[in-house]
Length: 315
Image (cartoon, rainbow, N blue to C red; front, side, top):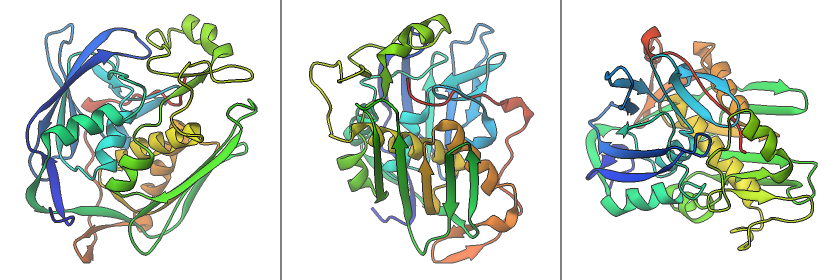
């Protein structure tokens, strides 16, 4: 398949599981979508009986605590979208309609690997239209305390450089940098699982979070060791998962990025925040189609009816 063509799925793919925060069962179906559709979520099973379409876009994100959520609680929201968004972006898929019958995506095994496997099982197809990118023209940076996130221009592709620095010695400080390609994503990123520290579990439960977390979908970190009997999938699985999350959050740009991303002690709030900084000035970016560059008045605004919402971070 030509990499300069927009892609979608060859056939629908269905997955089911529980939400890591709600603990409730949920089923999703990934549907093929036409050119220029982008990624959108169709929320069904609403108490009102009305379905709601929510575009996967940074303008629809509003809260950044423990996961990423689009939409709003009153008229419909979808939480914990970052792992699926990461898989779609990592595999270079442009157009998908995600039908979901509940307010939170299934956590599955805590990584993006089940989504990658489901997508690979049905295959991808060309949409017959030229692929478009958002080209970073000027560097933007946001800082919160010692943490920062930035986007900068580079000649080609999309390169991420993610660094974490935890006081807990089991996690510690580590860094992962690489160019994002489907093969590299499958090999190095997709299988990295979400993680959380055991000392925080009771606090999360009291706040209504992590009700579906278990050793089957979360790497549990004690004071001196990983609690999961199977251990880690990678020696640096923690930073790889933060890399995975960054890919998923940055997919909310609406189009793939051409540029470099760097973060230190980041998370969902920083990932989404740097997109807000990028789009705050039209001189910061251009829309690239094929070998040329063309300017557009603005990225599509999706209307107040889409609402805004988001969680951010790992457990």
